Length: 375
Image 1 (cartoon, rainbow, N blue to C red):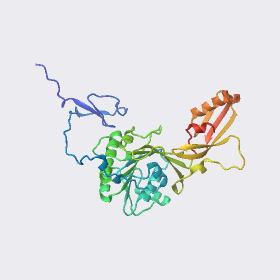
Image 2 (spheres, rainbow, N blue to C red):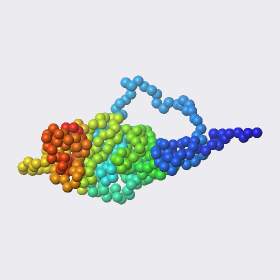
Image 3 (cartoon, one colour):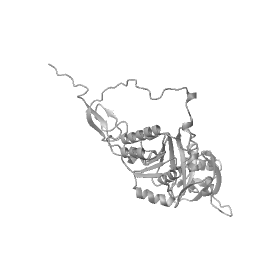
Image 4 (tube, helix red, strand yellow):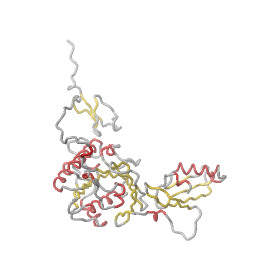
């Protein structure tokens, strides 16, 4: 008599330890997160489940009867950040701030945490990358001390949720989401499964409590938010913190914003005493001279909705190699090459093709709009 085929419960199933993707057969590479060697056997094949209708928590109302006053933004105390957020932080909103290491994310958020705290609004700052004493030293340096700012160093999700029950804050700052992990989920901190669980738990807590949340996110080598793109879909607002580590200028750009426009840019200056907003940062992009200097030109560019005066510098020298160099800083290399081709062909400047050309902007500002071509 032929043996019966193994039932669904007896067949093994495989799951990726990084993102939690499941399959009925083993694979060397996870199709979901593209990680190698992370698919392991964990038990029987997943059973097919159906969801039955459940009890409604809140009755549906006509949209005209929904109270919109609960979504009124509250100022963070930092004008440039409020500009990008569309007026401030909305209760229950989850904001993701991403940027390269050392650009000043922790400094900015610690300053926001101190200025946003008051008698009626407590702030909880949770650090998973530093100790509490290290954060206190930075707070002393940038003068970000407040009696209503609470500080905790935790890397466990349950401990973070416990602090929320104890402090009952109006604003939560988590630095960073990739360092916090849940003991109920397999995988190392920063993996897709852990990031999804941590972000989901904090989003639920923010919506239930009406608490605004600021999350710090890591970026990859290409400058994209680590995830991949998982956090961007979960949160309400995504901000990108940009800046050259050798320059003082820092820019906060809105990538996604459910409560406002995404074409605003906040300008900050990073210095020894902390970080301050700049209402008019054009002074950082200009050099002071009594007489005009060849190879320099001023232009007006738009960063979001804000016009800025920037300076473009160019230098040409005789090339010592068969293929002349084209080096740019703050400008798009492809657009500079196109302008050089136009000058050589239409401007009858034939010597450009045999010379090394170096072009840059002053102050680390990046010019990408076509209006900078003339400069």
